[in-house]
Image (cartoon, rainbow, N blue to C red; front, side):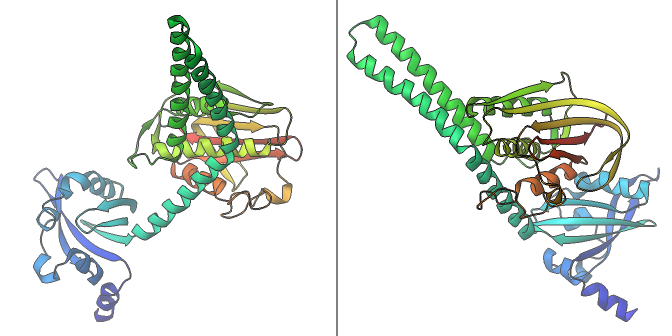
Length: 364
């Protein structure tokens, strides 16, 4: 027992044991501390003898722990299986990756501080956003240059005219041009901004439509985009920033693959479907059953070599030449897809193009 206690106290992550509190109807109404290891006590800034037997409400009176975590505790007790979750705790200024394990009328919670890890992940994601903007730069610059040509031309004409009617015409054109620039810059900012990291019901249909509309305004000559979007699709539950990055990463991947094509074609579709033992072979074998939202991006670009198919989702791997890519786009895309409980499939042929198909599970 002494050696077990020593191991418990010196573990490299926080561990605390809680006993459930029930009302007369056997409903869980709270939990009180049975034991906690040294790392937990240090984070809380307390001594064990001062907190044993106290409820979560007594330990953290300002954070309303019962109100926040009662659904999780009830789920653990009802299902009698471990539950993994993540939350920021302002009391200790920690982002903890938690695992709670039911043991009779108690549960054991372990916590690992992932604040630094998350910060590094955010740096990587921001770098990948900048790569996306870099891929789109030529199209953006071309579009802005066209609008500025209209602005300069109408300013010049407005300066030379003495006609109030002509002056109004030129000012109206300037107003339209500045509105276009404002819309373009707003779209660019949406690519790089951080949405609140709260999960919500996200209308994927509007996300795809917005991104498609933005791309259409900056596509180089010779590349066309066709969209096929099913109406009245249910929303996905997740973080908007993750869904937007999946869409944009696959779009920019396709554009890069077609950059040397005289007649590039980008087909985008979004629909719902029911799958029955559908096997997804890349990047890992998965069998899908049930209702799914299917997002597909197809291009007629260079395609991917067969020996590279199993590498494209590896962090740092890029098929782009001369350090054009960071190798972050597809690994980050895969990570976001997995977070939403989905899967991605790749079909490609060198010289003919690539299809990326993403499957998001629908909870109807």
